[in-house]
Length: 128
Image (cartoon, rainbow, N blue to C red; front, side, top):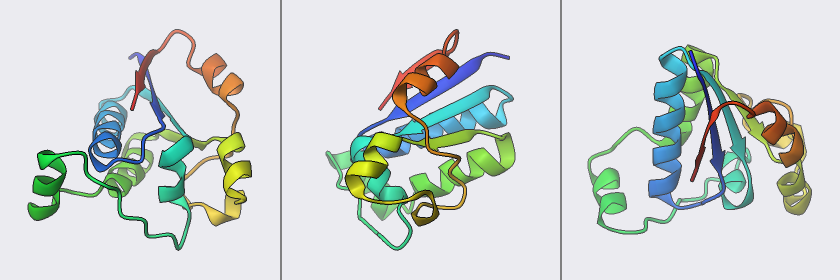
């Protein structure tokens, strides 16, 4: 199987949702799946911060109305069911002034962009 690498920097609902769908489907399909959470995406994974991801358009509103499974649940399932790895960006953690213990338990060890890009070598890279 191939390697699927997902870089998530947006905080918008639709982009977070699509990133989670790509990651979870890749992971449960047997692909090695690496996810890098940075910039506006990372605050959604800080424990106790229930930030509502803003929608960009009609699809965001429809997803809320139809109770589509939340992106955080899909990321967690990718880890549990498909052995995906979610890496919080160490630089974004510094900016947010949070430690690893402040993040959701299913996130892996913090990593920098240089290490993630090295790990993503020879893989498909998706950016959201």
